[in-house]
Image (tube, rainbow, N blue to C red):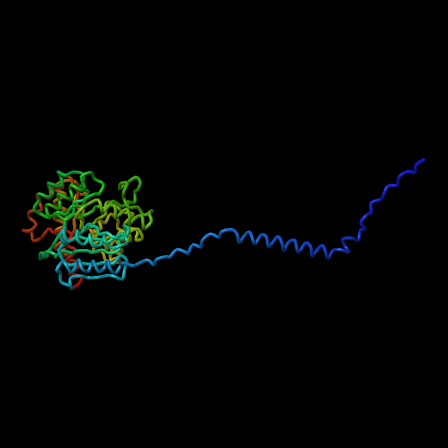
Length: 384
């Protein structure tokens, strides 16, 4: 009878094995990490490093302002004008040159423009209203060159000016007005369909052209001055932009007056950008006085813009005899004040009254002149 086989018992690890060998295990773990790190760094060394790109070289912006002013000075020198006839205001933006002399020829302007365009920086020369040039950089005006033609001799004695408002609807009315031997001033609404043609007729006949600027009245929107009028709700920048756009529509403009505007002309803040633009362009502003609280004189004086007020509306009553009486009343004001301004409108009755009354002005001792001559006489009186 065989004896049963005895199973060999597996020797169990004693629970204190890890405790007794912990130092060895830690050393082995650290050694493994060290070897793995060496392998990783070796592989990193084998990878190609991207080339180092040097930082871009920023070239300093070159200032060509002095070069542009040099071209302006060369252009003015080429006009053979007396040096004392050029006034320079270079401390403000935009810089301003005022030249007492006739406007240069198209050839001289083209040569000046070509030289300025060659200067780096997107410079250009543009022809602007009222005998002025602008030098622009990326469409922003940097320099204004204003030419003031020699003033005609101012007649002695009382002077009056008559402005006909609301022109531009009809060239036939403009031709009738231009046919008068007396110098009635044309005030043209910029939105009228024949506005540019009327300005051309006036200029060809030697008549002074004004922009009749639509402005917000007190009764708006019931009383509407038109979609492109100036409104007090707009910002200064918007008013300035809109006003300059209106000016750009009419050629030969020497000055402006307000169409409606009883609310706008009471707002000094709204008037400021208008007067700023007029000062830069050498234009004047005649206040039509559609409100007794107008701030035009105050704001225009602050900006150095020549200004006067309307004295008489000639045709509030559109009847020939009534208009004739108002013309005589305007003459009386001119005698008492030395000068006066009347405003009228292109009614058939107004044209008939002007035809009847104006030829006798000289015999009655009063001279009808363009508005600009009244302002010249006013400046002389204030300077004396």
